[in-house]
Image (cartoon, rainbow, N blue to C red; front, side, top):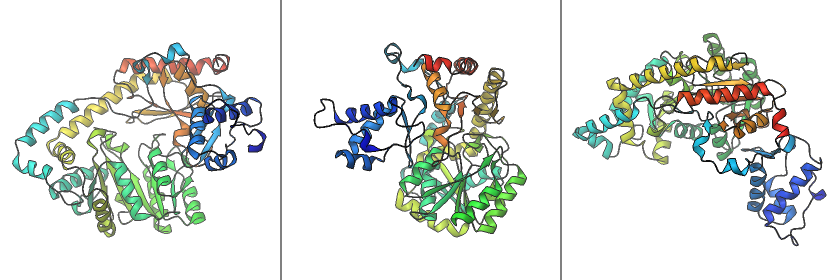
Length: 466
């Protein structure tokens, strides 16, 4: 995009500067001087050319994004969207309360008795003097010995050794990932990950100035040949991956695929951060990569996608050689995980409440999937019987942004493939649909009917209504 061809006169303009800039860029789009997918100038470049602040450019780009004319990708840039169609709702719809929106975009869990379990556990803690001391006092950075022992026992379900001295407790999985990145990387390092990956990793990598390198994926997750190629090409020493119930595709590695990935890691001296948070919902999760290569794999898990995101309890089983460094970074970062929430989670692990909550969650997922299958039948998708979401490939000529905008007009929210795309990889024309996004299964069913009818109608209505 050639900046000099459309520079607005900000000195004589009566509008706020950010609005004038947004309007000028919009006019260039309307005139066909930029093509779909073209990257807009970097914030600092444009700010220098127009002699305004970077904040002014940020507001202008934000305004264009609100209108559905551009899309920003963290750590990559701002790109022109297809057809430059406004994403704004008509005024009458915009004034409707948010409660009318059927949200199938958020990957959340549903209430299955967590509130009653919490109330009962807090009552028990209030009557237990030893527990009161644990939750009100400082604890070792990796957690109280009893809590580490309880978590180590629970992690055996993933095929892990159950060694409590290798377990560190964190304030959720995201905190665990941040701590591991700090001990395993330096600014500028290359970190391998799936071409479609957890958005939190993209944010962490940008904040820590790491270079994310995409590895090709298929229906089983990481493609071994691509992984080895990227290891050699970038001299990478760290891989982040989700081998079970991958987010967003639900891909789950077979036993043979896991063995292939582990052998490559061994040959290439590659450390792996394995995120098993989605797998915690399964009754019998497959053996973790950490069980196959314990000296090189950092196993991360939490209860956020299976029991309660509010507990913020994460757990790491680290290779023994790295346990001390992990403890030091936790101590420097927050001293320790929050003792009260860890106490609650560990009591649930010990007294069977956690197993009951997980079982109830699995039953709810099965019921929702039973409702969803006939409504989405015939459309290509990836899914897993234990997953609360599906990865739906859009039939031509639908594009992801157009489909998302049309559904939003019909008061349904989903998550576009763009949200999971790493770097400058072309986003797939696919969306993630979370069956547990709304508490009421009947409302979920209504949202899926709207999705199905929208797919069948095609995108013609999208352009004629714009």
